[in-house]
Image (cartoon, rainbow, N blue to C red):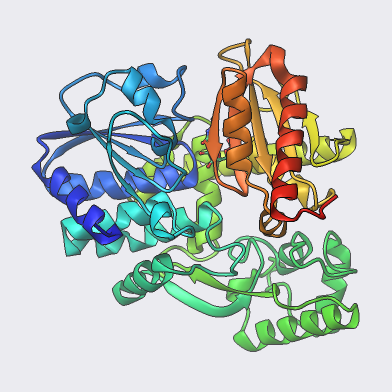
Length: 466
Ligand code: C5P
């Protein structure tokens, strides 16, 4: 059986189910997966309802109903099959649609997971889309949502664009459907639909450009020197997507020259980006990255259904609420980032860590950790701990690293799932980004244990590493 056989078998099971419950994750990929599957299932005239959880763990398991519906776990489930087993779910009650590392389990739940087939750069929304398309070709309109989910889950980040089936099948479908516009050599920069150009360039530090990155005034002067018109006649700042193509080329060439002059590599300056021409210009829905942030803002602040409604086309109440969530999300992430930088991290031999207490919700600390990493020592993974408001006996742990460290043998998923299991907690995720819940009393021992595991990983991949 290959991956496409698994997709086909999943579509057949869905089509035969009288009623379905989707259990999904509250991040951009989880919300996108839920929207794709629930739209595709209701188009089959099958009754479907959705439950969002911040993670599948003992605390959230009671949210999963015990009823006669087929339970589709999406963007989670693969790493928590033992919880499904303990709950007594039988094989015929469960379908897992995931892209996370799978956990061995005594019961063989049916799973559609791209990871064992080597598709490591496709997210759960990608897998959900392939199932939806298998259910009915009419679902090709959902390719756009799948792209948002994939980009939101960082599937395009290291490779400066989507690759593998996410690119060859999903992006191509979106282009064919005319709801997706591919910009092949675009500036690798966030905020191209909503931020004034100088802010968009200044807030970007991948690649870091001396005099421009983290320097909005430097970026503004740089654009002025190039003769780029930055405001319209009413004084409103222009955004990247609305300036003429020639101006975009001028800026990109000048940024490349600047990097070369500083002896830096230019390979991350350009990326393939995905725009949505049918959305209103200068809104976060115009490109995949900003759209995904809006979904994350909704989900991580307990309103995943708002994100789902936006994906289904609600541009009224849900969209306005999404905008509000996004502004709030950005402000708090900025605050968290500053808190990490100002407080400083403690460094062990193989990791750096910080405890942010109860200041920030456990659903966003991982995002802050990822952003802080580029401003800290990138060679060491970062571990952030925080309190869990619903259970004072627990601590949430989030870890982030980058591709270069993963290439040196680091696997955060392995480190966190092994270490948390030793202390009676649970964790999972990916090599580059992972999370866990652990008993609060074990915090310091846990950090030391993860440090030792990382040391072993470095040593196993490169015996000379020190
Ligand atoms: O919560 P955070 O953003 O740090 O999660 C990073 C990754 O780890 C996500 O892919 C999430 O699904 C996964 N994770 C997990 N088990 C946990 C916590 C997070 O698999 N207990």
